[in-house]
Amino acid sequence: MTDILCRDPNTVMRLQRLGSIHQSRLSFMRLLTRRLAREGWRFQQTAFEVNDKGEGHAVYTAHGPDRAYSLIAYAHDLPAEKRSDRVIADAWDATFTLFDGVPTAADIERLSHNIPVQEAGRVTGTELSVSRANRSVRLWEHVVSELAAGRQPDAAQIEAVGYLMRTTAVYGSGKLGAADREMIADRAEFRAPFQVEMLSVYLTRWFVLDLVQHMANLRAAAAGAEAAQLSPELARSMGIGNSTGLGMAPFLLNHPVLFNNWVAARENAIRAVRNLAKASADEVALFRELVDRSKLSIAAWHSEHPIQIEKLGDLRADVAKLDTYLAQHGLTGAQPWDVLYSWAEQALSLEGQEWIASLILEPYGALVDGFAEEMAADNTATFRIAGAMSIGDLRALLKDVYAWAIDIDWQAPENRARAWYVSEEKLEPRLGERFEEPIEEYEQPLAPGRDAAQLYQALAHWPDEAQVAEFLLRHPEHRHVLRRAQIVGRAPYAEIRDNTISDRVLPIDMLRCKLAFFGATQFDPRSDRWVRICMYGNAPLPTELTVENADFWVFPDQETVLEETGA
Image (cartoon, rainbow, N blue to C red):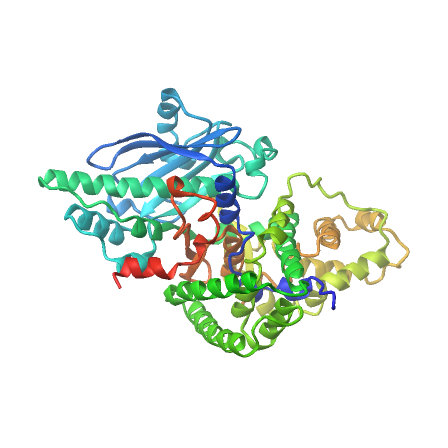
């Protein structure tokens, strides 16, 4: 039997492939729901004080084996002209914090002066995250009006949008004074990445559904009538939307060890499954079932952006090819998952290849879920530069990791057309046109390929036996990228192996990659620099969560689709 190795970083870490990754068993939302169900977390709404204008607050508490956490939600009556998804907005339809424990009345009062103003406010170490959300105005009004009239809302309209509210930011890790990551990293429930944020969004969805029902009830009562109760199937079908822009893109570049650990966990899981000698009948049956359910998601995935439209066309063609493959070959031979993936590499688009790479993990929770324990990077000491490394070894390392960059003509304007900088007004990352805007002096070190190529050139006349420390004494300007190269030498999936400042770079590839690890679906780019997604669509509500439904909710169920559409 052939021992299948992990995929080559030079293959995996190209932007086009990273921008085609799909959610998987190791996605952070699914890690959370599995844990909440497995450990028997208990959920309760402990306050809901919202008036007929939609103003007030609510509290939702999650009780775990050792600790409790509470989402404090503040609802606002926001004029339409103030509603904006831009990060520079200063008012929202709802604002939130995830509180460490159960808040007192004094906590709720204190936070009522800070959470609704977001960046203009300040919080403390008892607050773990700060977030905000806006309504999908068209769908919100449709759902409220239909329920108030005693009818269920139209499933087709719900499917077209997918969410009643979308977050415009979910901040954690010390933002605005909230608890630093180090304060909670040793808690079992938060060891995996972004679990605070995922719990916050999960509870936010519960609040949003309660709020829309509350507003419908009030509208019906004012007319002397009784509102319909939103059907559980329709409620479950709606997730929380998210609008994400350039602010998220540099994260993958600025956290190389963490990014490596995410990708390495997924690649190790893919390798483990590809190395299985055979697949049982039950494992094949589950895979085929989830392929069929995945088709429903792909069929419902719409976008108006030309890039995503083309990718969706490719993916739908890939679905048909997979059907033909499974009909002709099945999964009964030796190393069937490796045979399937190797076929996909030759026959499918990048979107289809990564769809298959994620899907083959699904029948093997016992084999692959443990890799999630390796996805955090909290205990990684700051990488000190290994000054004793020889120039010869450094040169070889650069050739191995950055060969793609060394071969680029960095004098050509198209290869350095863009520059990353931070806006003065909002301290948010931006990507500008180097030769059209006066931004070069403010450029951030987010072009590691170019910097590595410059380092390689600077080493040209240095003897192999010289040490890195000697070189840096004379050329300290290369310190940042030399450290980065040594990090990637230990963490092979830490570096995006593409030019991040070319005229062809698509930041949405970086956004898609990060959001897929979150567990997002229905990626809908609105430009090459921002994207809308849906989180927790089809997930059981906290009060419905069981071990049986905690995992595969991300795949639509045919029976549920029929119920929603009335077919």
